[in-house]
Length: 316
Ligand code: ASP
Image (tube, rainbow, N blue to C red):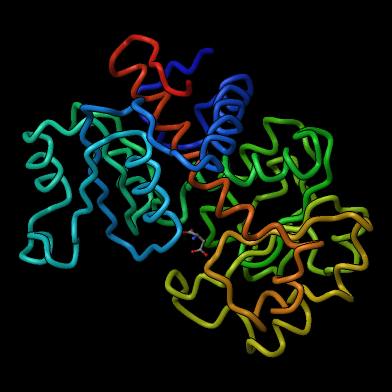
């Protein structure tokens, strides 16, 4: 099992075999998490600090649960109440925490690149829990695990990523991962929400759902990232839903067994129909949440093994 990284800052530096290693371990943690007794020792004696400078439900909760199930001492920094509010810089806050000798720092920040910068200043392992519109590696890994379990493989699939591609770190990390694993990627959305020059990434770009979804095995919907928009990117939510919102009619253009994904938080009636999102025959949205805990356990376990430079005795 090889995973020679000090941090998990993005999908970009990972090799396909490292992605497979992490997903294989996460698969074992899925089984572990379904057992009644969920106490392991992979992170025992280690201190994990979660620093979320942007709102989060799934990511923060799952990193906390993951750390606790693996025996870490987990601390959630209340960023709203921290000295950042008194004008302390991100780096000063990080250096202060660093002096308390944490082992794992989980960071979400609204600025692209902020987490990488922080990782250069501290001694511990840093996990990127989403930085601006740059990367959200654990989301792409949990999406990959969900796809692999639902489809039985993670290569040669046709995967459509739909909606606000331009502002989405989820889209970017998924694109990098799915490309490395040799899938066919389609991006569907209005031209105003498509990053310029994206075709150079070896993806197909569509602004029409009927065309783009044809033959898709996986349909991944994205939220409109209003907090990253500084103007009118869409005429109205109603119009957007009409053209790009996923309902069962539009899903009919995809393969009969296509699965529906969404990273959350979902805006029902904007990018996805609520009934379809809840349809357990098509939607794997709740599976994604379950996979999130397992993937974060696997990621922290692998980084901790490198920290300690010895194999751990995780699952017995
Ligand atoms: N939760 C994901 C993220 O943090 C997706 C979203 O916010 O729409 O990027």
